[in-house]
Structures are given as structure tokens and as C-alpha cells.
Length: 114
Image (cartoon, rainbow, N blue to C red; front, side, top):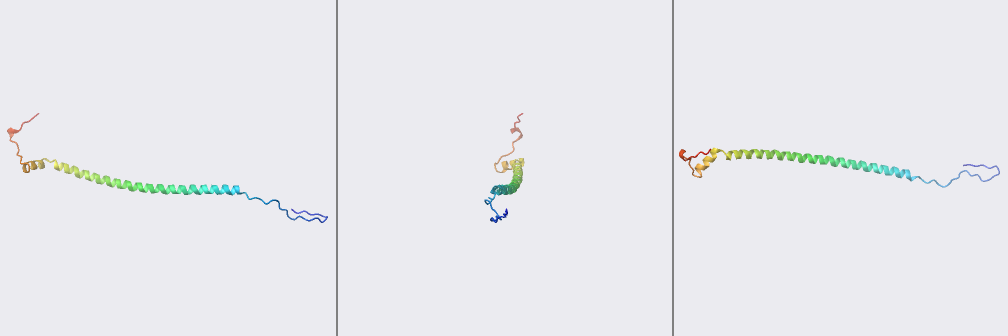
């Protein structure tokens, strides 16, 4: 402020009252908001990346389980074929005659049970 006087008193050209304190409250709130926003952004990004990695990992597990299922199905088919081959009447008769020295029964030795 400036004040003038006609009687020669000292002129006050500038009066400075107590220095203004900077308002750190607004800056602190802004900093906390920005920090929270940044934390949520980083957390969300990490969660997204983790979930994508889990999806890829589960995809690999599903693929290996499908391959294992196909291999087990093939093994099952081979074993069924082997069982059918081992149960064949011709094979059993051949083993009985050649290895066990068995002979076919004569008609009067057969007893039919109903």
C-alpha cells in the first residue's frame, strides 16, 4: 500500500504483513490421490498379467491332458484287441493240443447239462 502525507512523514511504499504460508494440504491431497491412482493402476496391471499367465499355463495343462487322454485311448484299444486275440477259441485249442497234450473228447464222453 502506499500512503502519502503532506507533512513529510515517511512514506510507506510497501508493507509486508506476515509471510503467507504455503497451503500444503491441497498438494498433499493431490499427491495422495495420485499415489493411490498409480498404486491401483500398477496393481491392476500386475493382476491382468498374472491372469493372462495363468490362462496360458492352464492351456498348456489342458493340451497335455488331451494328449495323455488320446494315448490312453490308443492303449485301451490295443489292450482290447490283445484280450480278444488271447480269448480266441482257435488259439486256446492250439495251446491245449500242442502244449498241454489234450485231445478232443469222443461223443460218448460228452455230457450235456441243460
